[in-house]
Length: 302
Image 1 (cartoon, one colour):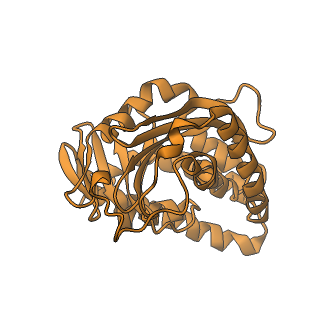
Image 2 (image 1 turned 45 degrees about the vertical axis):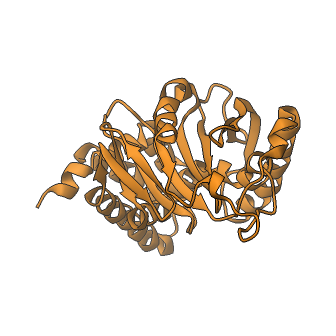
């Protein structure tokens, strides 16, 4: 923790030199909230191996090498880093090992029963075009909020759907506009488990170069996620249950486009400490989530 705090304090001190006097107190308060939210998150963390309830919908078997931060503490942590309040958030999964630098956000969207017929006919090239279009549209909102614009390069993993298990996986390469060509961008590796009332998402956030290694963590969680009786996809009752207004393809091309900016929003919040992005470079460049996990020992100390 001391190493992280030293780095954070140094970066913040440098960044604050560029801020007007009226903004100093606001940013100092934000930094304090980051510290408090992080300590609270790790103090409440559930250690694996364990069966973790995901609301009233499902149970996921948490491996020994991971821990789960419950909804209230996870929501506070995400908001502290500038992410908007998300009522669908169920929690966050992180690795115990200091050798891993990833996080998995867990959400449930009560959209209704998702018909998966269109998965048989979708064109991944058209889906990518739609995703790019949706990202460009959402960039207008990002600019208004002072967040960096995003551009979609292509698939990290083209959409794959298993109709037997009702599981969907996809990921695209997205980066900030104007980013260096050699930059290793942060990506969302998105996984979905369809149910009777909607869908659960397990979204891996990591660097693009680490996806081949880190995706095994989220795929293990996906394989060990089971809806409870009455909430499974096969339990759907057409006479009583709500059907979603969109099909499976929309989870890639439409509804999910907004999720591309999740980590970008966190990074942008850090960058607000200075227009030149000193704090963002220091915090993200050295493994943000690894240092956050370093706070766990301090959170557990009396």
